[in-house]
Figure 1 (cartoon, rainbow, N blue to C red):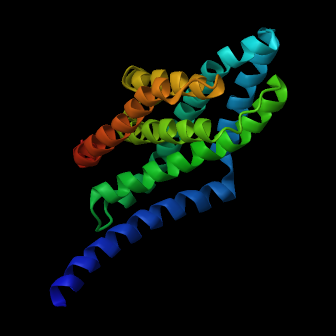
Figure 2: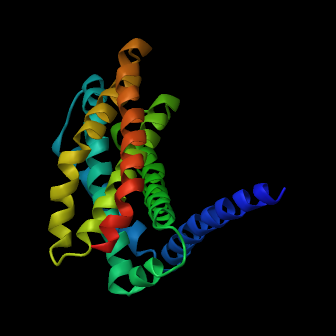
Length: 234
């Protein structure tokens, strides 16, 4: 029993540390509304620009929808990642979090979950607005799964790279330069899988892209988990 208790206590402390970071980020954002507001304004602006710039037939709108959606998510997500870590750095909170007596990986998972939550909140608002403007129903369970998988991969690697970029004076420029080349497989697979669901393609054509998203999420979450401590110490 003592051994089991010894095993459970560290794991409970670890999960509590992750939960505390997530809760802190959500409560802070609920009070300020700076991050979500900026992401939403940017995302809705992109959708409106595409809506007025591209006048297509209804059957062609389905073809461009995956690209427009993931361009919107990618740029809004990058803005959110940058602001999330910049706020911690500018207010001196990042140093305080790093001094906490918890494993550094708990900090990574807490920030990654927070960033994922912000991206999903934006997606929840963007999808209905897009459906209304383009007269396309996006309430497809498969499409929602792709949004979840793609956002998870984006938040996983984005949190690591934003932690690295925030230490520099050119963080606003450096993060996209670091992030976009690495995130290309996620965006490509997400666009293809989203298009497959919207066009009602057979699952044997969609599964390869879903497998890429799942493999990316697992691999880069594991990599970020292993190297986060060394990144924040530099």
